[in-house]
Image (cartoon, rainbow over all chains, first blue to last red; front, side, top):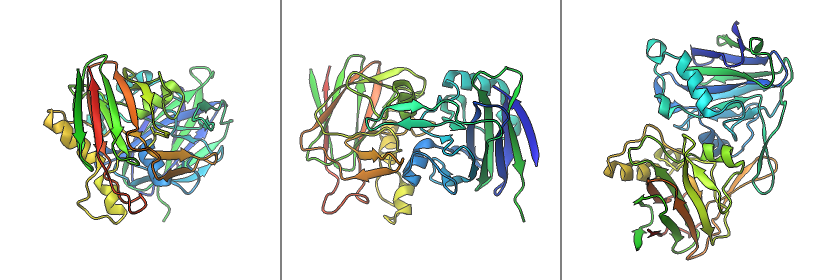
Length: 189
Length: 196
């Protein structure tokens, strides 16, 4: 498996082929990542909270569920989630505010060189990994602190050729310390 | 000054709002869903259910709370709601793909098409499709996280009133969805009442 260790705020970006397994492992407590993805062929076919809600009819995705795109296509299948439910679609700012996220992306990505990407003002909202939002009967949303401990893992399988961007995030971890490990493994034959 | 815009079933209406204007979305016959969107006049920013959920910490605003844009700008404040609710900020507008996947054919009208076709008449072409402010949509989330969509509970004449917090194009689609509704209900009309 080809993997990278990221500290908080660092970005992992890659084109992945259909069938590739994306593994994200926490290296510290209270750490996680913001996940973005879109079709390698069409940056407007983006990973989407709203379309995932609609297609799954569930707000907390589970293992074996798929995460859907704005074209209602399954982009990922969830293979593992050891802190389940730890894939949060309810609050986009579970890890970082959008302004900070766009600054981070803008400072890292040079999409024209690598692959086509959404324009910045139409950048999608993230799916947050190792995050959880609870909801009460009145529709009040509450973030659950410290969803993940060290060595928790989420594994996703790309259902089609994708561009994938991850931003590592952490609450209260020393800035330079690696907080997640992101790895890619080719489709098993 | 009061202005009325009649939106026939399955179609959309649009109004330019200035800061302080109030718009009522009125369910004429009852049980009709209204997919609403607000966009800056140049189309660079749109209402954002995601940003709104994050900022207000709720699935839908309470009276006095605000719908925000994807850039975190206050767009619309919920002023009044005579309906029993609920409303939704979770799901996208219905689109041609949804109808095709559910066996309703290739040419079914949709809130997605209504939004983009309406904005095109104002010279606005969005880079993406915002999720809907789904008024009168009977969408509930169970404690298990399961989403249930039932027959809309709104009654004839029920209205939701928003106040514009900035200059906006406000689009409302009388949702053409006749796939999930229980027969014999069919899409019906909406009215926009604008108080300037």
